[in-house]
Image (tube, rainbow, N blue to C red):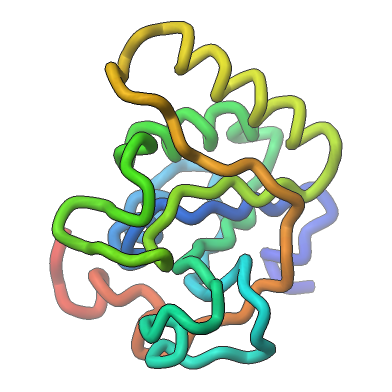
Length: 160
């Protein structure tokens, strides 16, 4: 049995800007079994990177995280998600501009939906951001794995 098919694993899925940095952040977290980057939230089956960047498919650069919930909770993953990007900038993260860089939590089930909504509400209430949080919370859509050269991109390039 593959480690990521372990009976105690769960899946989380996020979009938070360029997937290279987001994937690198989550890959280092104890309790995360595996990460992969791809495209989600759009209307075209099996999109390519070039199609997603054309803004014609509706996809966001996304990351799928397989994790051990006995080692790290979904709420802890949400905290990492909030910390690794600016959830107040629609269709933008830093210098990266476009709808593929929007902030989304793709929930797998009702339990994740409730946790995500509570987490977002707590962050809004905290006043940590002066601007409105624009992160979408939506049911998980089909995840299309990105081209191999995008997988573990920063790790391959030797960046930390």
